[in-house]
Amino acid sequence: MAVFFLRSNMNQSEVLQNVTAEVVNATGNSTRFQASTEGMSVAYGSLLFMALFPIVVGSFKSVGHLKKQKLSGKSEDVEIMTNKDAMMFPVYGSFVLFGIYLVFRFIDKDLVNILFTAYFFILGTIALARVIEPVVRKCIPLPWNVQYKLLLLSDEKPSGTYEEGEKSQKEKDTSTFVSAINTVLSNAAEEDGAKEDIPSASGDDDQKLSKASEQTKKSTVPVYQDLLVNCSFDYLTIISAAISACVGVWYLIKKHWIANNLFGLAFSISGIEFLQLNSVLNGCILLGGLFFYDVFWVFGTDVMVTVAKSFEAPIKLIMPQDLPEQGLAAGNFAMLGLGDIVIPGIFVALCLRIDHDFASNAAGKGVKKVYFWSAFLAYILGLVVTISVMHYFKHAQPALLYLVPSCLGIPLFVGLARGELKTMFAYVDNPEPIKEEANKTDAVSKKDD
Image (tube, rainbow, N blue to C red; front, top):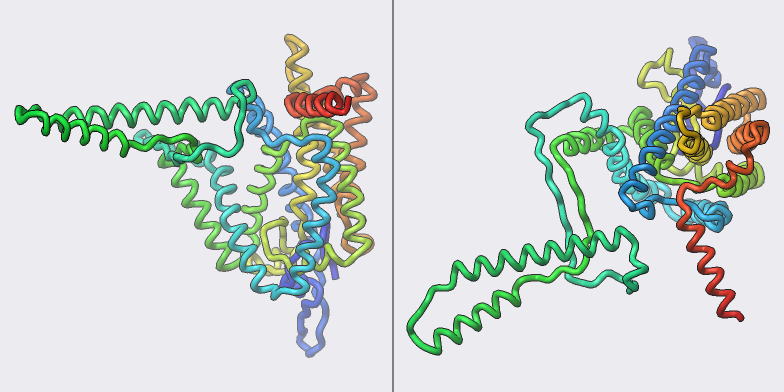
């Protein structure tokens, strides 16, 4: 029997299919499922490609996203990790993992999975629609496309009070936009009132009535103070959402492995694009912590395996090992957890942004992508080693046990050999969180003095 686990994240039905699947032969004897060499090659090769694809796409999208945020002056909108976040991530992850473990131990699994399925259906539909929208725009050019804007305003003040100098660019833009909306609505109400006012010669009573009516109209004009939603969309956005919703319905009804993989790829690309480590030090702290996290929960306890067997959600990429024999109806899966793609992937994306930063400081030179390719090839090496070890020992393997040393060690060694290691550690995507932490530290030290 050949069952491919990079991390044990299969749901219960899939594990039963893989571990206990039996084929009754012509003589009535039962034998366990044995994947063919061709089937394993297709499964392993497909998973390797599906792991590399979101890393490449997400890394390049992260560069464009960061540039866009810096040009617009809204770099605070990017999800950026601090040193504390990186250190606490494995701790929080452990609490969440153990909490889910307790939920599955004491609450009906079917009920819990219904809730998780509904939750990931919504998230997956949104993520997939956003990922495929650029493709839809290139494939379906609409000359009659119309742009719409959806606004959700509130007449309550936003939570928290800020001094004018402490407001972020996003808060200033929101305040300016809401003020403009209020001005437009107020002017429109005044114009409507002027049109409805009819001159009268009936005396003071009519004038008092007219003033009272005018005051009533002014009082009914809402005064908004916060912008909750500012969403732009067009027909192509709607088409992308419709396609994504169809995939979501397919996943809800059939739980088909292709629909699962589409959602998984969308989650991976979005995670690598938006989750930014901010510095190499943060990457070392995060990946180092998750190295021990993965080893402990896979080898040290049954928590990871129990949760993986019970959890039905598109948090993994799966590929049938009996695809050549069974076609799209195949059901004996090899799999790779999304965490083993996104976690190393955000470090690979950081290396690509470092390459772009070094190229911008070296006038007249193109982007060589030295650190990106070193990290990317290191990920391939680590994943191949994981597959080889798993296949040899026929046992579930924590992929980060092999991915973290390769993804950290090889790029850092390249930086050391090129004499750029110090420059690598000095790079930051966004210095604002570092400045904020320094200011807080200074403020605390002054209070103590």
